[in-house]
Length: 115
Image 1 (tube, rainbow, N blue to C red):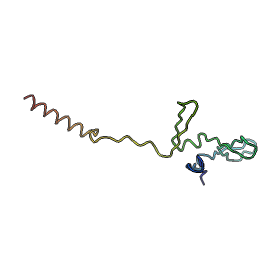
Image 2 (image 1 turned 120 degrees about the vertical axis):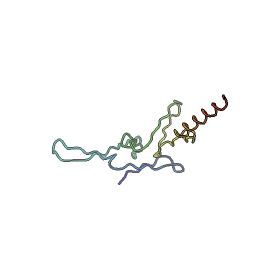
Image 3 (image 1 turned 30 degrees about the vertical axis):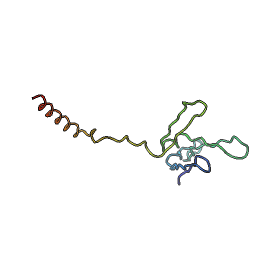
């Protein structure tokens, strides 16, 4: 069962799911030799009532594309998406076969123009 993290506020948010193979870490108890699991997610409490912050480290970020922007020191930003950046659209003229054909046509045109 995945862990779901909803980031944002009530009006604008997105839920990111992390699978157990990312957040469950297998370990061995050195005293008993028994297998045990650790959950690789850490909550932080900045108020006295509840955990109000979560540290989302490698177990979270290995599943998504994460970008940091600190170009404005007064307003640092983090971008998170599950979608890869789209490939730039290529022109039909970038295809290797088209380039060869275009070169040959240009060669013949130059031949006829120079002749």
